Image (cartoon, rainbow, N blue to C red; front, top):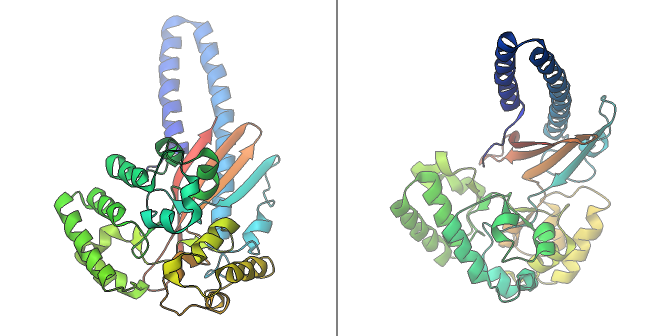
Length: 338
């Protein structure tokens, strides 16, 4: 994911502009110098506001990293109470899970056939169109621009995201091939990788977290964690419709999908769930693919820190490990507005 222009880039532009203005003032007179000083004053104030927004974003990242229950993310975590704890007057901060949705880059075509997700598509559009768009255009986090003509606007904003890792068990095979080709810059190798993946699927094998390193082999260093075997959705923050429909996928053979959805929705409002709680509420065996979809961890967060009309939008990724070690958090995007 590309990193947008942040505080450092703005500072560089400011410094260059200042040098140009000072040089012009020396050659052209006092009026230009006064204009330059006025610009410096305004720019300095703007930089101070941006600095305060950046510090607020970093404060929230710190709260995420210090979660006393790091194996699970829920609305009961201290970070939510901490959103209002800024010492900067006029600061307003929000936090949003942006990965517990369908990733338009990865979602399998079969899900549109086995659930009501086909209703999310624009009239006349099919899951094949979505799959072909990914093949033609590649991978993007800006799904509104890339998929707006395929997915309905209200569904796109509510049920879809461009932020989520590619679970090797549940991601579309052609999307995995595309991701491999981009990451490794090797189109032929991507087809070999897809064949390797198909062999695993033919064996009806569910890849475990501990097996990811062996499966990816020598490419592990470049493909992980973009490809992994972590459950994609955090049931604490999933939309109720998505949760119900995922549980209703026929091939998963969940005994009582509607009842399981209600149990999860009711329990998540009262307490923080763990991975050990899900089998009890879902009633499927431990090797069922449902546990590749549903988990209790959020992988991408959006932090918005705002002061008046000034705003910082920050995307924060939780970086998984294949050995259960402590989570790391990485800021992958920063966008200042205006």
